[in-house]
Structures are given as structure tokens and as C-alpha cells.
Image (cartoon, rainbow, N blue to C red):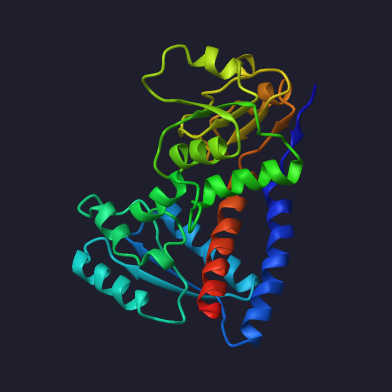
Length: 284
């Protein structure tokens, strides 16, 4: 068996074409979807992520803004900018690029974003709504993973799903979405005993830890759908995921590559959330 590769670039392009049509229709009515991104510090990877998000906005007929601050900026200045953006009718989504410098309390900064503009879905209010099955915004990476399942026709109801990783950004919301879709969900983490045993029974296996080669082909149930959320940089500069792609591909039925899998879909679903926010604002 050789797994079918789930191509995030191709699926993202297909979805973005539809987003552009909706954005153009909205703009014709006087509302252009607007995303504002705040970056603090000079982390190289964060700068790349921000640039990719801004470029995606330009390609999809969105308005976008970047607000870039040095690492030693006063926290109050960032909070003041968020308050200004909360009140700006041209802005429908506010994203604070993580990680922030250590002296920032990320929770305080994220909670300063108005719930209606929290397109990352990280505010406590939006997290609570997700748990109740009534999210205002679905966190972008788990949202993108669910779109993979939908597009490929991968069933979730009644399936055994294992999520490796319990972060607030991916692992926890991913587990909630799978549970709402009818899967039986196990969340594994650094304290889990016998990770291989859990992975081997998973019909749906999602790796989101950030550890190169954590999941090997020997740990995968034949015919499983394997989603690799991990992004790790090797000594030679190349990117890889948490899954050993070569061995996993020979066992799984579906698999995402790194790069080119979940990453493009995360940005695509950020556009989706911003567009939905703009449409709500236009109809209010």
C-alpha cells in the first residue's frame, strides 16, 4: 500500500478561489475583508509566516495590514494598537503572531482582541464556544485538517482518532472537532505510556508535537489517515514533520507531507475566518 498524499497547496488553492469570489462580491457591496497582523520581535520564521499571510490576502482580494514592533516595545503600545484595531470597521480579523517575547503574557494580549475579530480562535470565549460545539471561529490549523477529511471523503463518525500533542493551538481544539464529528478520541502527550500502542489502533492519527520522526511506519495502523502538523528544521535547513514520511507512506491510506500539507491549509482557513467575520459585519 502506498498512501494517497493530501496536498494542502492544491486544496488551499481550490478553496481560495471560492473565497476570492465571495470577497469580490462583498467588496462590490462596500465591504472588503480586512486582516491586521501584529508581529513583535525579529524571529525569522515568524516574519516568513506573516509575509505568507499578507501575500495570501493580496491574492484573495483582501485588505491586509502589518504592524511590526521591535522586541523591546512596551506591552502597553501593543495593547493600544489592538484596541485601535478593535474599533476599526475596515478590520475584520486581528492576528498576533506567536510566539511573543517572553516578557509578554500571551494570554493577556490575545484576550485583548475583540471576540468578533479573533480569527485565530484563541480567546477563552471562543475556546469555550468550540467546546460547546458552537464556535464563532475554529482555530485555523485544526480547521484545515477537518477540510482535508471533508475533501478526501475520509469518514470520522465511529472512527478511532488519536491526537499526539495537547497544545491549546492544535491538540486540544483538534480533539474537540473530532469528537463533535463522532470520532472516539484519545489525546497522547509526553506523559503517555506506550505511545505506539495508542497509535497502532488509530484510524485517524494526527501528530502535533514538534519532534522529528516521532511517528514511524511501525506505529501506524494499516489503512489509517495520517495528518502531520509538526514543522521541524533539520541541520541542513530542510523542513520535516513529526512523522517519518517514507515509512509511514507505505502503511497509511492517506498522509500529509511536510512541507506542503497542513501549512498552506492553516493560512487558507485564516482567510476563511476573516471572510466569515467580514460577512457577519456586512449583514449586521
